[in-house]
Image (tube, rainbow, N blue to C red; front, side, top):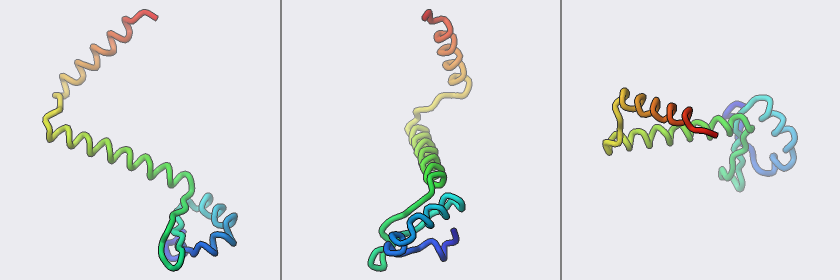
Length: 96
């Protein structure tokens, strides 16, 4: 959906819900719903929502990584791989 057509009043949503959902699912996008002339809600297709959630999760991981780096909670690459190798070997040696 184009930005110019992605803002609709709630009355339009009520009258054309099925059509809007069909358009969102085929064109993947976001619809801004207004009430009394002010933006109040967002309607998205599920794929756009999932992509947004994945992006937010990756940004959180990046932020935590940067915070850990500033706090000095980091390992050298060789030490990290060595630690992983030890954990893998311990896992393989476990008896089920």
